[in-house]
Length: 320
Image 1: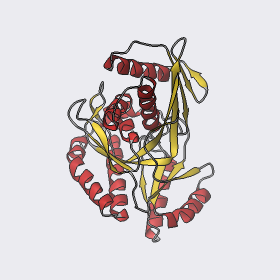
Image 2: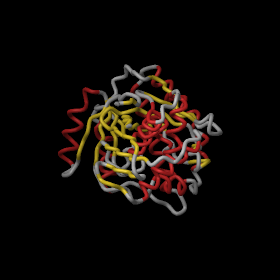
Image 3: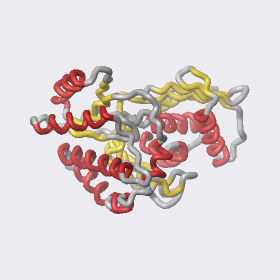
Image 4: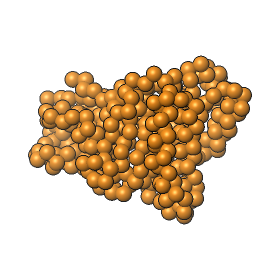
């Protein structure tokens, strides 16, 4: 028997950056994301002779394989299932570990294929909780459009839910890949280090207000407010990184250059905003009418840049 699921990655507009329980991946703050149509993972689960993990058709024997099967054992334990030998195959249409939330789609698809393989009767709320155990951001990739991951206080109360799965907002995201190399500092280690910033707790205290403001912007179809809030929240996240003790950053010189270009475009009346996750790559939020001009500028300013246009993507699905 073989079951395959597809899940799309998401980009957090209100960031998740810190855990209060690493084992259950319970976050310190609530977050809000946009699921993207251009980036996704397809993951298959089938009976194997031994545990094997293939990523993009290459057999893995490193920490990634260990993480996958540790996760599957947790799910097997949770449902009282035996440790069956499983072959896991994942095709990842997301640059891995480059700040484009590849784990969000990967573990959402893995959770869904696991439940389909074992014929488990779970709703999307439970599926979000299961995906969260593998990767926090995966909890949001269960849903399309805009999703909110409420931090909760325990395993049962920490899950994502849809805010608007079919948004009418004219919102596109340009994923500007400035650096395709895996990041030097993992998100997990970055989250831990960031809490040593004297500004981490003040940022945390702002979480509810910023989340509520973003929800209002979405409900009011206010693109300007959404973009401004997303940019502010990303800057706050990277500010606590820069002010941690010791300090660190995911920015590279081209990251700063891209930020300045976005600011210059706004000064010229071309409305766009940036958001940046744990990596050097910049994502630009803009209405459809501005895409051509933005891409033209970035392609002229960077020699090896790759730009992918994304819009709203769907929630997780079972393919077979």
